[in-house]
Amino acid sequence: MSSKLIIFSAPSGSGKSTVINHLLQQKELNLHFSISATSRAPRGTEKDGVEYYFLSPEAFRRRIEAGEFLEYEEVYTDKFYGTLKSEVERRLQNGDNVIFDVDVVGGCRIKEYYGDRALAVFIRPPHLEELRRRLESRGTDAPELIEQRLAKAEYELSFSPRFDVVIVNDNLEQAQEEAYQTIRHFLSQ
Image (cartoon, rainbow, N blue to C red; front, top):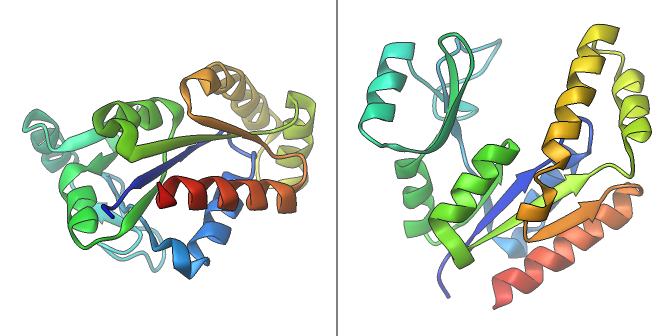
């Protein structure tokens, strides 16, 4: 059976990272996280090739021009994030199933590139007010940043019809189980 790709996208605060971490612990799925590239400097104890592949903005641009990215975004001036084709292909050739945590545009691009070999999963909150509550309860963002995240979430939610599966996370354990069963079924095909 050939290796497959699982793409996760969601608005901030939807529980996507928690669901992904749960899935990575299910060893029988043989999931391996796709390491993204970034042009930002490492933070704290981050290491090149572990959390990210750290590139200078110039090196990132050269790789864009060479067509080496499946998807990328310039989030702020000279602050790029993206998925290197070579990283994904290396994982697939090792027989690994690759799991992605990407924004909605990147998720759509990866799905377009790999077609039926990829499953695109969108995690959504039950409604925007619940998302607001989750973001506020984190206690990590200023009120204006929460408003920005909510505005971005509305935009991101408009992409959900372009995904293969939409999982509503109104109960974390149920969302994790639904994601697990969905991926298990996809990998067995």
